[in-house]
Length: 217
Ligand code: SF4
Image (cartoon, rainbow, N blue to C red):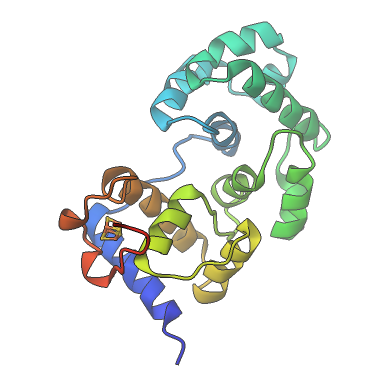
């Protein structure tokens, strides 16, 4: 019998009991969530939060589309790499303008068609595209990141190498549910920030009884 699905669900339940709901992705509108996913590349959410506070009065797609790059760069400065992220946001908004700044046309597409479109935008990678699909569009697609790879390798899962194959592994072994994927990814991030860090705190870990500590000394 394949034990992977039940083990994955057991890990989810343990993390949920330990940390509770994470209320991801923070944002009042799908557009705000999309902007957040782009700004959070290569930085911590604390820095993104400061940029989001600056952006809050302007968080309409048309407003940011028409904003001068220089002003946008100043507003998002706290998120780091602000010139690159200004370009990425503008690239994204150019694409979004082609949809009349509406998510409706996307809702008729499957997740991988939406993903293909998003990956065609310069500066949008798989993790960002999938975060937009899951957290802004509420379509079930499992988001994979460095934390996911680190934690599940240590737990003893023999994960495939590529992003897409790792995603397929989770999707093949978990029920395809938006709320489950939403919460699971958020819990993985929380656990890796607090406990399964680069130098893990295994003694206090809620998963220690089910962990093979692969790759650890
Ligand atoms: S026991 Fe250690 S290596 Fe395993 S998940 Fe917990 S913190 Fe990570």
